[in-house]
Length: 304
Image (cartoon, rainbow, N blue to C red; front, side):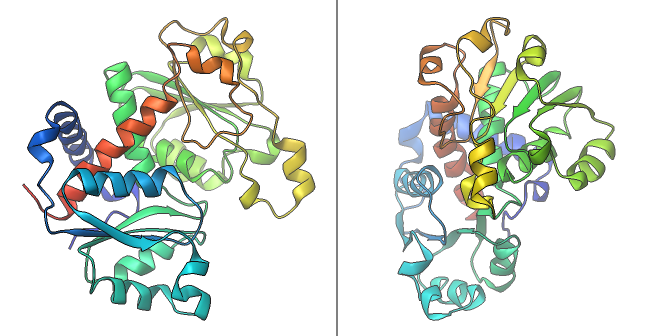
């Protein structure tokens, strides 16, 4: 049985196949509208989500399937002390596939080990968010026309950002990728990402706290929010939350074909005035996310 727990579970060829199917769905929606007729997706979300949960649910509905699940731990038997292992065993009796989000790293892996149906990691703590990464890859492919020969700036919370960790891991497998890692010193990329991903794969990278200085060199700017829910000290969060705010002024020296991305939700890190800039791709990103999740559901359910 196939699961998706980490982006490393997929080969480059498998990722490209999902991208190709997603692009076909975008062009031929009617062809796919009954593919999951009679199938059910369970969304087990132990922490808040708007885009990811609704994206999964919309994806299954547009494939002709149905959805069930819960949107917080308090509305499930987890509030009574039920383990993840028991929850997925029970839910597997009702559903054909499970998408799970949990605040603890490794929770999705535990679920996959005990589940009798395919499990998709919809985010586990600060560790991994593989379907957001697939969304990002589809966005880059559609907006830039390639997944190689790119300089990618990632700005904001690089320490706790699971989307950042997954994106770096995925893009490090493509040719001629360079990273500019932009963050305050308190939110720098973890050492294990630098050692086990960037340096191990001989990927060129630069760490800096200056966004504007490196802006002219970027093909992609991936903004992230400072995540309040990952901080133990509220004073630290307040001090760092507005460290970077992208506005029109900061984009004046950017490339004309820069692709501005954000996994959302945003707080203050991108000014709303940027929304009208043709280089802003973050709302397109949301739409791409639905299509790549449709492709993934079909793949894991082995639907032709």
